[in-house]
Length: 576
Ligand code: TEU
Image (tube, rainbow, N blue to C red; front, side, top):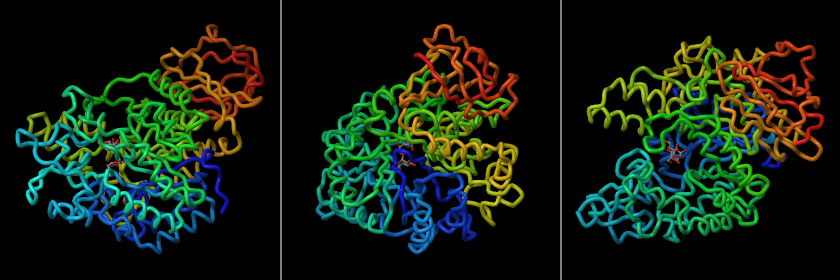
């Protein structure tokens, strides 16, 4: 195996229970992935981030781990896992696992021991506090699910902290034996031959020692300033690195770190600091989401996206590292509603792809995005599975909100919108995902519009082909990976345009985020508009532009972009 330098990678996030069912139980599994390895190879990704497959009660789809060193039988066996690893390695694809070490399941033996008595040796593995002065919760922190972050445990008369579900108690990283035990487990996985980890909620492991109350008007969830990027975070991460990753070759780590400043990102990812390789640039995905109300949407403008691109580029590019993405299993898909698509759905899907593959940062494709899958809307609450979604529904309806309104919020914001099974073949029942009814329904046909793998495989103008081409374009052109970026038309409200530059080479990327023709006025830009441009890629069929020669323009000719049009040009020479 000869792995690519990870800075040149394109990562593919595989959410296993929704990828492919290989054993006919309605739940995606390792055999299903093995059956589809060729699909991944053809796509061109060289790094798979595999969602959690560990033993778990599956309250949060595996982000609640009961036993780190066992694979849940629903996913298969350790043998299946080894086979998958071998197939991927034969094709120079890295496999990185999801590592959830901010919390475990409450069914983990450590927690079972911990809750059993105050003097149990495992007590300090978790964060226990006696009731506050009023006899209630020790502080006002709320969990990501919206309820109190504390649950009272009768057995010992104390509360335990859980930033997520009450069945996901937070681990106490202040306690050295816990850290040792985690490192041992991590080394065990690295010894299995895996290539690294995505570190779940990793910037939350160091809590402020006093666990102070948060101001009531702070952003959701209350308390986050006291545990995100906490006081000992860099010390913990460096120790983790030294005790585990540093002893293995080719290991790649990708940290989930919401709410970070660029200074912090550098601390996390500067190679000489020995913490992590890259973080997920999460702020791009927050577009359209109300920060105070997780279930409400808000208007957004592409200027926010531009700011985010610039912020990460100027703050981190070329020094630390970060992955860029617009969808994961935690957020609704961007199409059709958040980005918008109008009557130009395929163009919009390809526009998103062009954006992600041509801005600085390592692109991360969440499964199904390469098919342009839509955010799935289930008409009945009974079809939703996510505990956070169901909890919100129950509370909101009990509080007297109208069911129709609550469902509308859920349609727009539920994490399940991105968790529908991959449609492998539209001609088969369950869209070819499984022979039986899947754990969550497939996307209804009137939303899917036939965007299945089998169909897209045979259409060179499909979204799938477009992703493959972009991945190849990155492979062939270091400018996309290492080049600098200059934003043009910074105030334009519909168009994003940037120049990438690397050594003697210059590219211009133009993206129209509007569902209409939009004109461009270059006169205010410091750019020589008579320079020749060679078109490298675009999301409208070739020769559909009414110019004499499709592939060569000068900038002055380019006065208009079509709805959701994306264009990549090589510029012969340009003075900025
Ligand atoms: O998510 C952690 C996280 O930071 C959340 O803000 C996430 O954005 C939120 O769930 C959105 O509703 C990670 C996992 O990606 C997520 O699936 C898990 O539920 C969570 O950790 C707990 O392990």
